Each structure stands twice: as structure tokens, then as C-alpha cells.
Length: 474
Ligand code: NAP
Figure 1: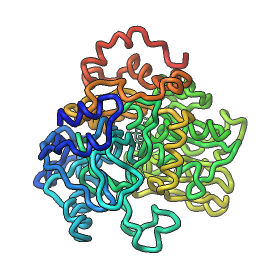
Figure 2 (figure 1 turned 180 degrees about the vertical axis):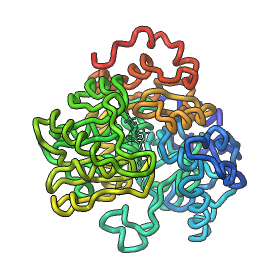
Figure 3 (figure 1 turned 30 degrees about the horizontal axis):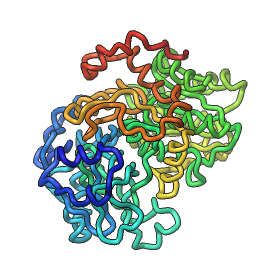
């Protein structure tokens, strides 16, 4: 692995040199184990600690099959799907691997007693399988997480509709939280040249999802002037939804859970914020009932901020605790677009407000090939910026996953895989200088607003940046 790393880090990587380097027999990867599926049985979701189920293992290197690529992973990022995998909810992901494994001899490689997790990466192509023409060893890449077969006509227009659609690193094995990763070559996209390895690994999954959810005609088809209510506006999805709304001339109304997060929204240029905790909003009672008085109060608060208008689009993902309020506050003819149910997937809403006011609920999930490419293009051109707040080394990735599960982070948490340090991988310093002020906003915020310092890597807690960082909003 050291030879590979030295070759990748050397100036001017030569394809043939890299292609001729022998591969190691095994690599380090963040995994869960099939024989531990029952370890949290009987526990409440919040008590299931990913640090108990996540392992850093040496696993065998898979050989790329036709149409695939083996990537030296420089950096990855933590997505919420790794929280779900690590607590075996809503179903153990080994079920997906078993089902995939029954598809073909090549897919059978994915059905292992371990699952290598992770659905983002930035890195360097090491090997390509038969038939891959566009990519070659030495190319610097990011990978989106859409794995499809495209043998059925259903997916030929919108690749997300392929019946064999899977999320790589969640419903497939050999994911990105590892030193090496196996992807389909069609997942590869150019790495944004002005970003570091860890910055470029962070937008992928959440940004592409937010792009389809908000901008694409497969989602809410946002237009200039739309009022967009964004739940969790400083989280993974939300921090890209804010940028897409502002870029597209829309007016975001950001819901967050602390004054510091509200300040971070304003620092991104989103003026209208609601602190759901400080303002005491609670849309779901202990007994599992929706609270309609709260829906009305929330609608009033949004109107105060918008000059009396209701949201044209509600960007939904918290699910059960907020969904009823989302349907209620959307404008006549408005759209509630949902990609998740973090707080519970059985929702309650009052259908009268949906049909009488001609609202639409749209279900959306990740992004098709084209949407993922267009989302990456925005990052590559410096029009959307990574919201990386902190980076952990691979051997502390389980702590990072715990941090996300407990909602202690903002934006995205990066993971250094092969990259020996932060800050490497930039090959377009001119563009970087142009957008520099936007690149470390979340890191500066993170350094001065540490919710749980003991959960941070020691290097960050003691960072001189923490003392020097400007206040959020400046
Ligand atoms: P994240 O980084 O944890 O951000 C989620 C934000 O939601 C948090 O920052 C929090 O913000 C807010 N939130 C959490 N619980 C809430 C509640 N009960 N009520 C109101 N707000 C709440 O996670 P993410 O990456 O944005 O992902 C969010 C969800 O979407 C996860 O369930 C994930 O699995 C799913 N997802 C689905 C797709 C897909 O393709 N279908 C793609 C990406 C993510 P505040 O505390 O500041 O309000």
C-alpha cells in the first residue's frame, strides 16, 4: 500500500507505472460483521452505539470485473446511511448483499460476512476492468454512489428507476470508507481540481441528493423566487440545499436547532432562520400524536419571516416528527419533496390540507447519472462549495459516525483514508484562491462551536485555528 501511496502522491502520475504496481493482498476498511447483526436487539435506537459495531479490518482486495474500477481512496466522508448500517436499522444491510449476490457470479463477490461501508470517495484510479475506456490508472476522481445494471428498459430514461438500482457502500460491498474501493466505472467523475482530497470527497452523496430533490424536474423543479423551507439546514443535505436555493434565486427559510447554526446559515447568505429549539417547536407529542397547534404556530412564524408567504417547496427528510407540519405549511399548489425519515418512517399528515390546497408530495432518492454529474459540475466550477467541518483519520471513523448519529456535527465529516494529511490534492490553486472564503466556513464554525470536544480529534481541539477563528456570521 505504501508503494501505491508514494506513486499517487508523486507529481505527474504515470498511468503505466501505476498499472504495473503490484496490488496488496488486503486493505484496511471500516466494516460491520454479519455475525453481529443481533448485537443491539432490544435496545432503543438512540442507545445503539455505532462504535460497538464498526470495525477497522484488513479485507481481501477485490479484482475489478468488466466495467468496474479499483480506486486508491484518498478520502471519504460519513453519510447517515453508515449510521443506519452500523445499527442494523431499518434492516441489516447484509440482506441487500445477499440479494445482490444472487444476481450473478460477479455480484456474488459482494455477499461476504463483512460489509465495507461508505458511499463517497475521492481518489486515484488504480485498475480498470475490461471495456472501460473513459478512465485509466492515474486519473483523479470522485465517485457518486449510484450502482445500476441498466439491462431493463425502466431505467433507460432516469437511471434511478433501474430495477437493479443500489446505493454503493450501503446496498453493495467494497465502499469508500477504506483504503481501496471497487466501483462501477460509470460512477466516476472528475475530481474538482481546486479542492483537497477531503473537501472533494464530502459533497457527493448529499449534494447530488439535494440537487435532484430541489432543482431537478424529477424533484421540486425549483424556480427563481420560490420560498424553500429547509429542515436541518446546517446538516449534510441542508447545507447543499441552502446553496442550491441561493444559486437558483430562491428564498431559503432555514430550520435549525441552535443560535450558532442560525448564524452559520446567515454566514452562507440565508437570512431567514428558525431555531426550532429556542422557539420551542415540537410537532410530535410523546404519545405519538401530531400537534396541530404547533403546525399553525410554525406557519405563522414562517409568514412573519417571508412577509406573509407560504413555502412553495418544503425540503423534507426528518420524517415522522415534521412531516405533518411540512404538509400543513406548504403553499397552495406547493410541493413537499422528501428523501428520508430520520425520526420515523410512518408519517401522519392531515390529507385535507393536501387535496383541498392542491399540494404535491414527491418521493425522491439520491440522483440519476446525469443529476450526479451536473451536481459535481457545480462543485468543479466553484459554484457550490464543500461544507466539510472536520476530518477524522480512518482509524477514528467510528467516532465520526457516532458524532453524526448524535447530531453533534454540522455539514459533512470527512475521513482521511490514504491521504497522509489534510490539505493535499489541490491542482488548481487559482480557482481555489478565488473561492477561498467559502471553503472553510464550516471548519471555522466547527472550531469555535464544539458541542462535544471529547468527540473531536485531539488535533482539532487544540488547533490554533480554534483561537483565531472569526465568529460565525462574520
Ligand atoms: P445530517 O447531516 O444528520 O443532517 C440532518 C439534520 O436534520 C440535522 O442537522 C438536524 O438539524 C435535522 N434534524 C434531525 N432530526 C430532526 C428532527 N427530529 N426534527 C427536525 N430536524 C431534525 O443528515 P443528512 O446527511 O442531512 O441526512 C438526513 C437524512 O436523509 C438521513 O436520514 C439520511 O439517511 C437521509 N438521506 C437520504 C438520501 C437519499 O438518497 N434518499 C440521501 C442523503 C440522506 P437541526 O438539529 O439543526 O434542526
